[in-house]
Image: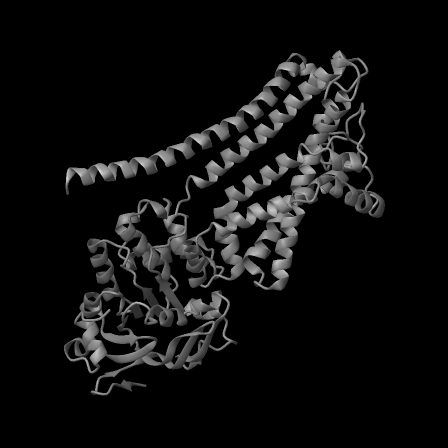
Length: 307
Length: 261
């Protein structure tokens, strides 16, 4: 090969590598824009609100005096609503995903269900609020309670749980399914003994990602009639005497973090805006913690599994 | 009951394929297959890629039932029961006929649980019985000495050859009547291949073996009978020595001498 020819090859490679580099730089810039926006928002809120975050802030009820107001009712409400949401949405969503992925025949009905589930994920949350108001509050008489709120948010994140679970199930290699079948396993044994344990980490991650969407929802909770000013806690789920556990809290009126924030933001007194920023910081902290747990659990369950 | 080949070879049949046609949707993959599988012998299925040998093998444990659109016509008789009949549950067939796959596919569980799984699906949970059966199967697969001190280790930490022997142990633990091997050494290095071949030759005293292989040498080395398939048809079936010494079909001769395939 002559040297001229080699020169030409190098020029050609250079040209193509340059295009490659341009895209890499462009991508990096776009990511920076996204990250900086997010960091900016969070930082502004933390700077505004950090002075109010103290143990008292977590243990005080709302008050007309901004420096005495706290988020006790809100964080307890949010936590309890999340428990109901998780208990309702995760088993339902996982079961639906297993059915759709492993049992349903591929036909028109399956396609219809598929399109419906995908579309449900895009329905505005306020519409879920209206549905819940009609169904849970007026039809089933569940009241403006923690139970209603939890079930509403469960409906809201059900599509997310279904879609992520289906993806987790699909990621299990087919040769493991065949290995189980070849040993005489029934479909359910194959799912219970293999598919579910191997995809457990991913399913959990999906569930927690869904819950971290639910934790910030405001519109549907307001629609079903959550209180904005509340100075008492729901019944404790734990009891001193037998049976040690109580479900009375399910019927209790409540408020949640985003509503508490909304309430403070809409007051004219600027002092309350600082409270709102502080509550926002706590809410973001809760979300980040849930995502952190999701990442850790995924690591924990996947580290022993490779194929 | 005995079967006689054209040139006077006599053997005891284990399974009989009768007028078997198989369709993937509208594509016919097997055309009127007739084959008698001799008991406690190694029968090799050879032929060029796409000739239907794996398809035929997977008919024996109804693996095709797992996917929609597949259709069988004809029979495979296992002790006078047609295992392809719709009223026979595929699970029943798979409990009698085990399979070892092309790529080692141990479950991401412990070595012990991998082997025990075939018994567990049957509802067997008695530890003492499982312990004995697992040891017996691992000895049968020539793996016991290598893993006896780490039965609770993850199976995925074993080497490729060990994983494949684990899969063989997993297939043996349920005392199957037939073991199907689908190119069991194609993903392994020559040393691991040699140990798997040796193992399969040892197994044939206990169990009927049906193996798909791409390697002519492998078929010649340790199979007793060979079936040559071409474009979905079974062209020739005979004792391995006979087939490799004087194939009766021109196609077979071309393939085993390396002119086609």
